[in-house]
Length: 372
Image: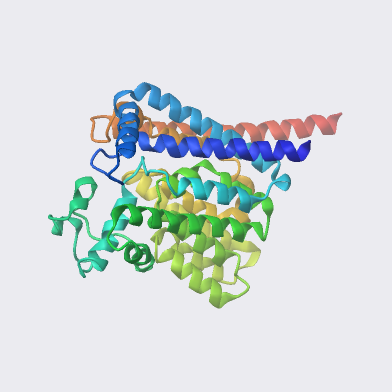
């Protein structure tokens, strides 16, 4: 009976992930055509009508999905010993490889940045998407006037799916998504070798699923290399190389090199964590806070799992910050960006208040038990 319930829970979770993948097409760019077929056209039209022209119900559907994802996440973490993290990761990955990046356009930027080199033989660091005005992909591109903003490690990785797609957009889309699925699955596998709870926490975390797999942010790949380096610290050469790969994708993780310094009482852990936190907070406070930046903190699961696993309120708030985009319209609408910032701040304050409340409550409960 117990095994039946466990399998049933995984099946329900797979259905939920499939619904998330289906919902992701509600904000499909109308200019994108994956296949020239009536079935795709009809499906896209139905989803676009729902996402663009029935925003109140679309927002309610999004909230329902997020609440369900967090509910399953907390259930799986609580019963981690009963489930195989890798199996769950494979289910989620194989489904979400087909999901549309409905909350970000970065994936398409990655695709075009690689295309600049593989198709046009130009350097993405010196050429921009706007330099190729005749390219049909520009119809759904954003940030076409910016040069390549990432480290030197990510570009070679993206050349693989770009070359294998032979210039075909739909094939390139799937292969690029596969790159993130591979990073996700191997991260779960890496964690599973050390602790099943860590692995299932990462595998089912809604922020990982949405920002890493659905939206396809390269922070996920940076986290993979960073985590492998952290868990390979006994081999300093391997750890150094892996930290270099991580920082070569997103500079946020450069502080991981502090872990290689022989310091007493694990001081290096706190220096590294502070070093990752500082640029994330600086950009969030002085520029545009993005929820996927906070994926980088998951590198520290082996060190600070207790703290990271108690930040559900803030993680939920990061995803709720998409309210202006989903319910009200594009980010360009006046007041939407400010509302996003306000939502993140409110949930951050709620998380802090929850922390101090629980700390005070646990002390009082401990005192009462001793008194009894």
